[in-house]
Image (cartoon, rainbow, N blue to C red; front, top):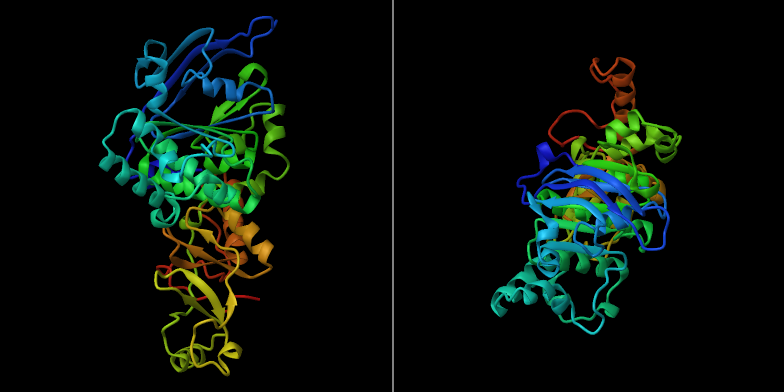
Length: 414
């Protein structure tokens, strides 16, 4: 769940208002979408979540008139969407779908340049914007701009899809289950990337999913939709988890509501632990002495851009003359944008006591441990037990003490 009040440095999005919006198809007795009214605040992510066939995608597509509403009114930044030429409207709204929807016969650069080209940007500006967008979504322009979609992984294609949707700098981004076709690990990374981008860009994003966990992770607000897009509950993730409005919403929340609370906190919001770090060019002897002086069993080798590479122990150093190629691969990591739920899943997947945390560009930021997560849940339970008026309970020494991120973890890989 984003904390727009504290993390977004800018808001470039605009407000969207749906007033009694209805969609009826000829020959069907019931409306596909019936009398939906809600406001999407500027600069926030609002997630439509609901069962298959409930009308959530239809509702979203009426915003950019890929589906024309039968009645009602939709305003974008105070302007009636029906008064705007449909093509002009769509060029001002980013659109990202499942499996990216890239043009297979076009290079990555030409895919990203699609909308800037349609609105007649000059070639120099387009070239610059393509490289900027690829870099923004974590794809090196020199490596990827001349490739074709078939030469990319599913996760890379989704990143290109997001870059294309953002290329013309639209205030609004519509996302229709954009990460639904990738594996769970890649999906988590793409969600983190979206959160990082939103922190930088502050767009207004309408996101459709059937995955409530994804809704809790991404949404500033969640609209839980029933049949015909009837709004069962429209509120913050915290409010929905704490007080589901009805049995249907409670069904989405599920029995593991306490664990879902981990999704409400970002890794950046807890105290990270630290371990000794070196680069591949550092001295083996110096590292041996460092580990011995600190009575440590592990250090982390970083690359030239401070990105985690490998764990190294005294046993790895026994006969080493260089740190290049020495040690064991780091394995699964999380970012500062990840949730504590993501961190728990990474820890369980790797069967380790701690996992590496990276920053915005993949640089090492620290470590997070199982004890950190347990301590956080204990604090949350204490707050709820005192009706949110008590201070968080003290926890045993789990490395989450306040010392500006310099807490050292006693061990790393297990």
